Image (cartoon, rainbow, N blue to C red; front, side, top):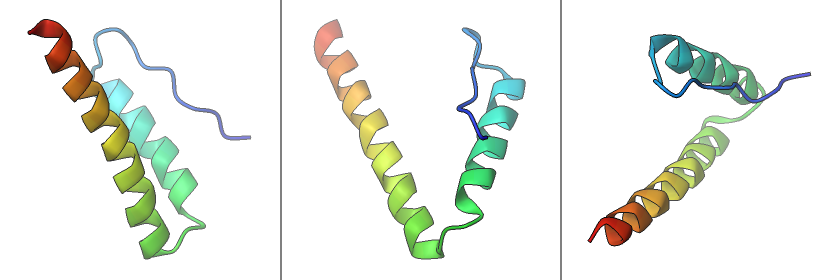
Length: 58
């Protein structure tokens, strides 16, 4: 069973490796179109968090 990687507070190179490996395993059964859509969904969530963070810091 594949579980989400746990990243450290420092977010170092090892964390990036864990995330890449996790995504590689998730994407192995997907079509290129599905991979792109999955990536866009993740990027939209991150963009939303960044925008909320910017609003909170103003």
